[in-house]
Amino acid sequence: MIAEEVQQEIYALVDKNRLGASDAGRLDEDLVEWLASVNHSKAASTKRPRTMTWDKFYKHLLQGFGTGHGAAYRPWLTLRRKNPSKSSNQVAAYLFLLRRHGFFFSRGEYQIALLLLWLGVDDLREQFPLWPIAHPHPLFGALGSEEVQLPYSRGLLDIAEEAGIEHGVYPGTKIPYVATMDFMLTVRIGGDQQLVAVSCKPFCTLEDEIKWRTLERLELERRYADHNRIRYLVLSSRVVPILMAGQLEWCFACSNIADIPQIAPALQTFAAEFSSTPDLSIADAVRRASELSKLSLEDGWIAFRHCAWTQRIDVDMSKQILTTYPVNRGGRDLRTRLYHELILGKTT
Image 1 (cartoon, rainbow, N blue to C red):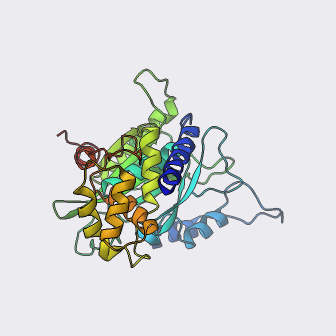
Image 2 (image 1 turned 45 degrees about the horizontal axis):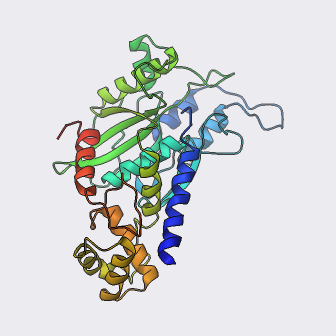
Image 3 (image 1 turned 90 degrees about the horizontal axis):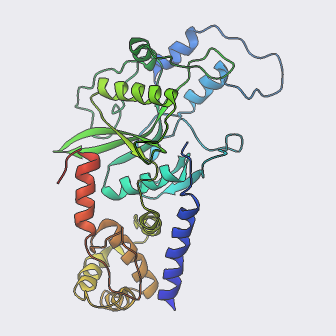
């Protein structure tokens, strides 16, 4: 019965991702000084303005939006009642590994975030601001970067002017718009911390019609990344298969088990015992491994999902997980290949 309940849970997550598959896609002191140097007046009306104002901009900065790393990061853009999308299935979700809430403006973005976290990035910052004026390097302030000499980053206003591309302002104002990168990843390559910038767009084929303004924004992102020596990657928001997305989400809920102390000491035994019986169905293997590692069956399923996420147990997340059948192997090779292709930009 438990195996059937687990299977239904997987199906529910896959179905939820299928509903979103039709998406059309869609600081520091210097910044404070810049705002202070701008002459702006408060609106006379007591009615709360819906457009951006300098006061709102300033308050947003003071609240820490667009700054921080890991659990302390606050995206520049968040999901609110007044900014729903008419074309995308937006997602606000708790990011267990990062211990904070994340905000994604399409289900495709969320699915890519799950994939990138599964690949093993150190940090993922969504809706990352590309500030209009010069500012500290995007890696500045990250744990472990204290000894690294990081160059100052040029503002996007200068980059846009150099490229001959209009930077843009908030509608109805003269306030420079704060463009955002969908993801700014922190990864460790050869012992060094490096960044990878990722833009998610609803492109499916090379024949898809792309708006000229979208191409301009991509070019500004590319130039910003190039200036800061950051690898830049453009991904289709539909790059993650629906089945894989649902199964990643199912396992992601158990990716961090720091708050379940009774499971952590048993993981090594559980994974070894599960892997020693490759011909057993997943349900039977979980039951056997739970008994031998002295876990309850409920905790055993949590251990399985955690081990599938971390690949302590070799599970191919791109193939359907049927709990009444043996597990499909090949997840470790898949993860290694995708990491090399997406993060390192190399083919294996």
